[in-house]
Amino acid sequence: MANLPDKLTDRDVALLHFLGRCGVMKTAQANVVYGGVKKYHIRRIERLSKAGMIIRDKGYIRPTKKGLVAAGYEGDIVRIKKHQCKDRALAVELLLRFPEWHVRFGIELKRQNLLERRSQVAGIIERSNLKYAIYVLSHVPTSGNVTFMRSEMRDLHLWGIERIAVFCTNKKIIEAMTVEPPSGIKELCLLPYPAGVDSFRRIFTKDFVAFMNQRFPGLKPCARPFAHFEWRGNYITVMHTNDLVKRQTLSDYLIHVQKREARKCLLVCTPGQVKDLQNQFMNHDVELIIDDGTDTEIQKPTPIPKEDSPSTDSYYPIHP
Image 1 (cartoon, rainbow, N blue to C red):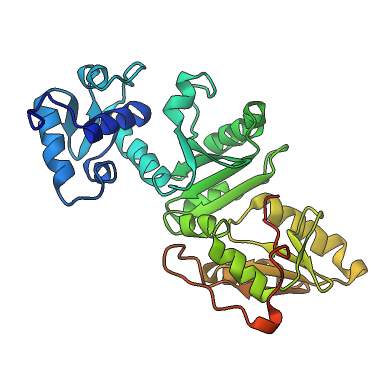
Image 2 (tube, rainbow, N blue to C red):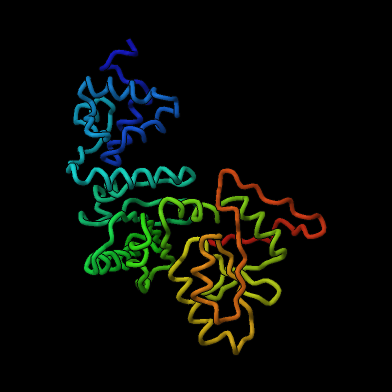
């Protein structure tokens, strides 16, 4: 009986609830819901489709009202136009890359009237006391669109969101979005997709804690807006997320204050950021510290030498 088309398994229910939250996804993305078992998700999707519980269309799947009711999902079905499927599925792909975070999709937030209907926020990720609005852009925005997004970003603090991450599928989009951060924003991370996901996740891992402890034993948090830490008379700024707010305040310090204070700035960055940072800050007293461990799943930290081993209290998180 469990294999009949109209009999839902627990994972069928989970898939329908997920589709109720995000609206649409690629067939291949459903593999995550079914535990990664090869081709099993395809067989289940075929059964659900025949039972009229989902719609399959050119590699995408969407829930039907019948499917959501059968799964016990509370909420109206989201009408998604065919031309929207690609971008919506891309947002799902991105947000699935943050398994350590609590994720809410943009559609959910619009239903709760936390976002305007025309908002371009793909979703929100939350962890401990941190909350980021996530954007994913696959087309070069017009100047009007950039203005709209900056206005939206500025107003997100009304919903308790002061940190933003924008993922871009090509360099031209990054160039178009490299603008002055809106007022009231604590972070505006501008990253390539998909490579930038590892850079973002990296700074929240134990591996990164080990790297920082080993490279800067005894570092202390810094209250200056352009730096995260202080160490042996130097300032340390972690650049992994390409935070435009941090870059702006760092640039202001280097231009107007550094010569007077005579303190070097150490910029911790990924290998892919070296050229850009050299071009921007080459005329100032900075040193690049390259972190090769941006692969959060594979990279293991080098053992900390016994004589340099700091106490467990010597490392402070980037986001206290």
